[in-house]
Length: 320
Image 1 (cartoon, rainbow, N blue to C red):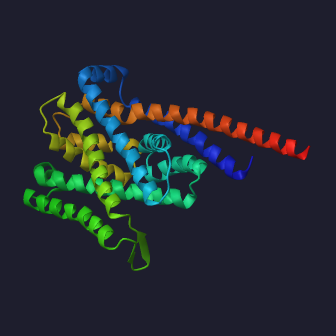
Image 2: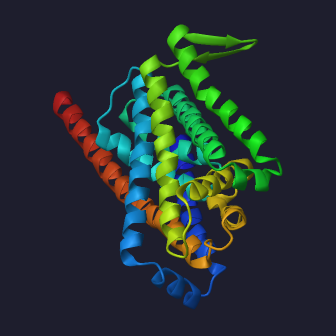
Image 3: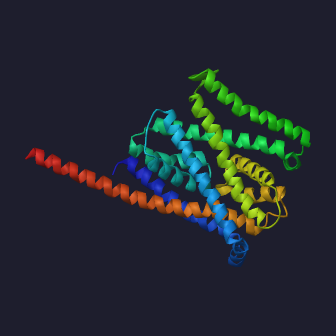
């Protein structure tokens, strides 16, 4: 076995062990009775609707990779892209440092399908930009529609919050404008950036924003089970919480998500709502992603072994 294979196999085992550890860590802070009672207090129809929104979010995240691969001029079946994206992000969201952790899993899959390390690095950067554009756009909308909650957390007046929101909405507009007018490499001092086509840039803004709206909708379903909360209050809570999670890189946003959401919507952010949200968006995808990773590794190894055996047989036949 080569050194490269040993390193990747070691990383795979470490990732699987970390996934199991995270499953334990997520729930060790709550008693079993608390978890059961909290989840039971969520109506089944509400929980199913939240799962539907979570599923929509992960579908949007797969579109990030689709757009990234198209911007590279490459082509892969959507089923492969969706598999790589879901496994990478379902684990990456919980491991922390999502860009790096999910990038390692992406490389594991995409390198088998003909993409180079440079291609995967560009995909990671493209997806990171899409995340930023979506978060900025939705955050700008939330500040304009619901300036009170954001202003209370940021300690600025509502009028200033709306101005910040309007400035935030300028960012995706500038990005799309640069993609339309420059149509190539953007150079800033010693750095250069390859801009996507205008249509892809617009799709980045749209899909990125829709993704975060779906996650906020998942959270909103859980909060609504414990009180009457406006949708954009849930949006504000999630945008602020996700911004804090990205800044701290805490695995799964443990503690950061709960603290931020509880501050924005203190009455509705009960333990039931937050645990149920974690189950829908973090825990269930983590279990599914880990399972799919194990299955895919077994399938890939068997396929690779079969291909090697066929190659050996052909070589022997030719030598005879």
